Length: 229
Image 1 (cartoon, one colour):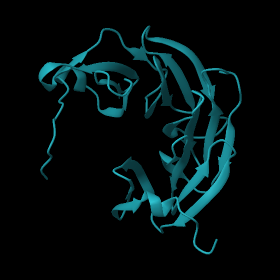
Image 2 (image 1 turned 180 degrees about the vertical axis):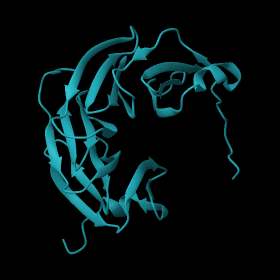
Image 3 (image 1 turned 90 degrees about the vertical axis):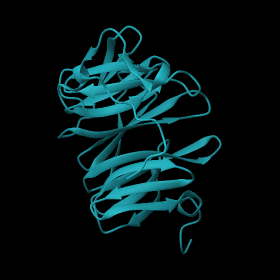
Image 4 (image 1 turned 60 degrees about the vertical axis):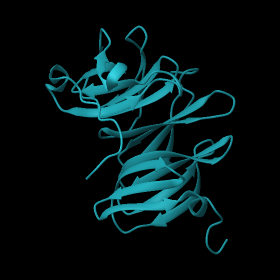
């Protein structure tokens, strides 16, 4: 496979344990700043001249192995390990709070859905539920709202349906669903017949990685009126 792009390789010292999660924590247009989780540690790496990566001093030590990361806003990172999501101040490398899901099993995925008023909804996939926190930056102790799927959820992605509106794509054991994160309302459920393992949005399409391969779904078609509506 040939890639037309820049390959960023972490130095050997950063690869002593497998990388389990990676996230971009810099605002658009700024210098690229990555959060890289390896075991229980989350470190910040900055891309510098020539495409090299330089590690910033200090790290964020999570109580358990980190499986997912999500950027909540300037200087704020969500990290999931086990059944708990921790919020970190990335500037001071300080843990601010932890969010308890109330479910069983590890959190598999995180996603952040921004709103026009500057707030955000944090989504965490765990077991057969997706937990939603209404802007955890402003109410750390607020309990989450669950979306019940009835099937194991493996992947989350944020899809922009209008300039100021986003919806949450949820991939589970047999289908792909679209949800309104503000109301918890199901917008569309697409049976795929195979487990969805990963989701990514790029170039006007939602890419669905499953046990059968990868399929690209046109966003205009996906977000259009449901068949028979």
